Length: 188
Image (tube, rainbow, N blue to C red; front, side):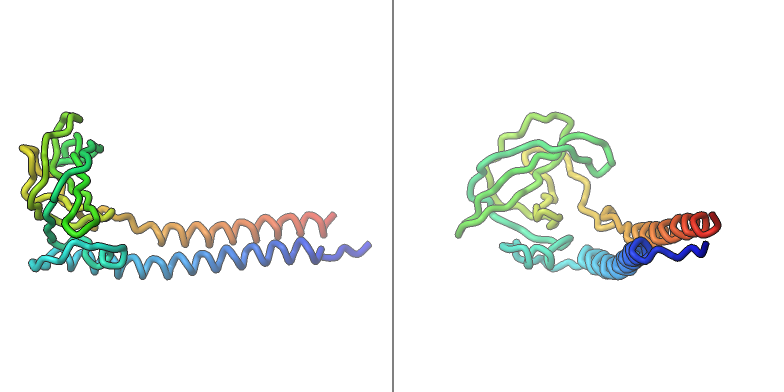
């Protein structure tokens, strides 16, 4: 009896493998995009001129890792989040939500301490580095706190090469398993 290759399962496996391969190439494209973004952020770190505090998402993307300043008219709240100081010690980063003149708000990382108890800070002029969020990491620190770790674009992961390899391996695995199943079926 002659065995035939099953058409529908073969098509499904080939389409799935094709999708996985396409996803692998997409991750390679993302790798190059992320490398360009990280290079732009690294260049921004060395720029000495200040930028205006970003008022929208597009402006925030262009201001990341640049120096900026805000005037905090009033503080609507201060919270403590896990953070590091410049020495790499773990503790609490104290983040104030500042209301700005003319509307809007800004998250300001006032500084670092070991205590989760928020300092009493009522606002004022703040200068520092724009970090993702966006948030302004105060430099110098405020409210008697220690300096927070500086925002560093090197901390942004770029895992796209490993994701691409995973997708290619998934496709190879699916094709190999299907080829073995076909061989067993056809030899039986």
